[in-house]
Picture 1 (cartoon, one colour):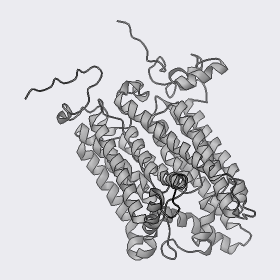
Picture 2 (picture 1 turned 90 degrees about the vertical axis):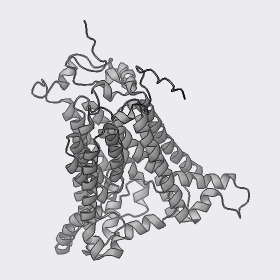
Picture 3 (picture 1 turned 60 degrees about the vertical axis):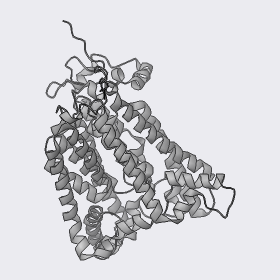
Picture 4 (picture 1 turned 180 degrees about the vertical axis):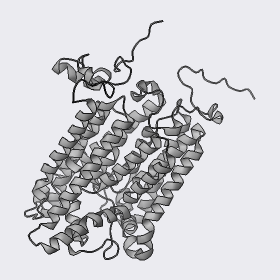
Length: 500
């Protein structure tokens, strides 16, 4: 009996080529001669058999370094800290890393939490101190040193290394699909926001946590995800999909080990600052509890619509009312996120085939951003590695990235208008950009859900028998109790109704 190769996979059945398997890339490739040919596939031969130096892995890593170099150039007008005439907004180069070196007192040698409250989770505060205090010590003895510039460049170097490490993790998880990592490497959002804040610290740790889970080391995965959650809260949300998928596969023990070690890591990292300086440590939680609706969120869009729809200026619209009642806003936001997580859990248990971990992880983190009252410009980085692992298709990805670039430009226009009291764009332009960003993320979620319900459309499954990120879940059968509850696959007949 003859066999037929899967489209997009080379003769060895190991490597995907987007110009063959991705309809969007295949269409674009026609402008430069068509899909990748047999001679070019030498780039993707197994290790030790490459005929050329520039393998797919090396090309992607080089592209990542190039993107980070472009980011450094893009931020260079702000590196000296002499932000005159709002240059940080007119040149799109504002970064919290440089601004907070002074705002958090690191330029004066203040130790985070001990001498100054920090608005971020503890591992980010420790990271700031670990890099900032040595810079201050050197600069204190040599006044000719621009401490802020040294601090920014040191952070850029470390955060850039974490970005490269994240791409290396994606490559390790997708050995048969190395070109998927190019979505991360070439993402415009990475060029624009890589060092706006310290988000790449949590992203790098979370990526290694996913790799440890894929390598069937749940305890190590839990520690790494816990450390990532101690830097930014969102990596802890990844434990939810792990638990639900483990429940479906009857591998709950491994998931509980990962969850337990993650909790232990978070507690151990937080404990020193929480016990010694409770008020300064609590600044992060206090700020997130009391802050109102922030720019660019679903709630911000709603406030704008309140102003357009309402007829009585003395009567607050629903979103304006929520902004004036922060505890209720918090409750509604958390409740909507909780309902979204419940929906993802039901989807995970009822899907005809067990979803991949990356698919659920993307849905959960995206839901958090969609319903959150804060959606800072650099939060786009949270979704980058997850969407690459969940749905590595260029078309919708590029549409989302274009929307993010539009939002980035509109956001800086909003900042400049606030600084000068002269609007750069009409408010409706910023709201439109915010809506486009929100809509493209929702579209990505819908596409991921469709591929969960129709796993034959999942391009990753065309190269892997099950879930390359699944670890102990990869290839595991479903628990017997799910047989009557899950949706039937295409090849399975619907269950006959039981007469009563």
